[in-house]
Amino acid sequence: MSLQAEVFVSPWKSFSGKNLQIYMGTLEGRYYFGEVMKKWYLGIYGSVGAFNLQKWNYFNPAPVVDENGFPELLPDGTVRITDRYQKGLAFILGISGGYHFIINDKLGIDVYGGIGLTQSLYKGYLKDNGERYDGAENWNKSGEIIPTRGGVMITYKL
Image (cartoon, rainbow, N blue to C red):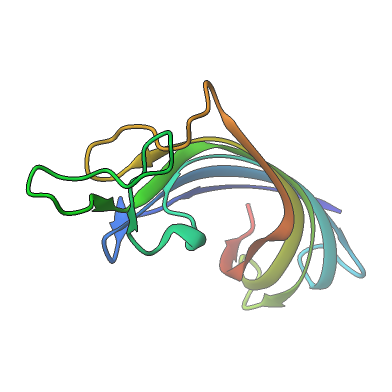
């Protein structure tokens, strides 16, 4: 068995004009089917993250509507259209699996993937002026079972 801690910080505030800033910490326990840090393993992990991003289903700008559902008009009479983005916190509990390749006594390559239960608290904002669009008094809440991790990692054994 092994214990792994990791920190992830996105290197950009936006990507292709869309908000995409993430800060995340993860703690994972792994069970190797042979020797530790060699070959196949299964893991259980927990993550906590903060985000400022644009969810996939908000990628296209949309008309802004008032509380009665009517489009807001700009001073020139055109309909106000803007992007939406979300800021909040995420809590994840999941399972993972992967394979650890050995390069030498200290270095390795880890190929992994995981699925987890994600619980999020967030607020939604209009991109053009930063006002809330969601109408919630406090936080919106969201929960899904989704793929939450995957990739290729270079490892170093302490």
